[in-house]
Image (cartoon, rainbow, N blue to C red; front, side):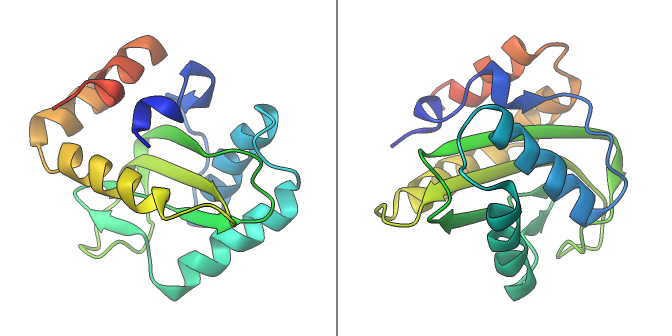
Length: 150
């Protein structure tokens, strides 16, 4: 499984409005609900928060990758969200997060989420890639960066 298989322009938000960690997670989950990816907003939100409580998915460099394997996910999906102001996400480097990648995977699925995490991580290690996502002017542009092979 690759990023290109689980994201589209409807799963991209260039202007996240949430000011807090929990509210941004909820905002991203709502996008999944709008796209009919999940069966229960409340239950999937609880699964993501439960995973987040194990350890923050704020990995540093202004990036967070909240995720969950859940029985409330109908099909794998990746949501991208960007915050201009940044959000305190209790990241490993104690810096604000600007780029969010929420991965939703069905519980009975394989370890496809690990492949997505690995693919994302490879891309995100490049400062030029992070900068491109921060400065992209459209969902189409973000999508092109995300699905481009590196």
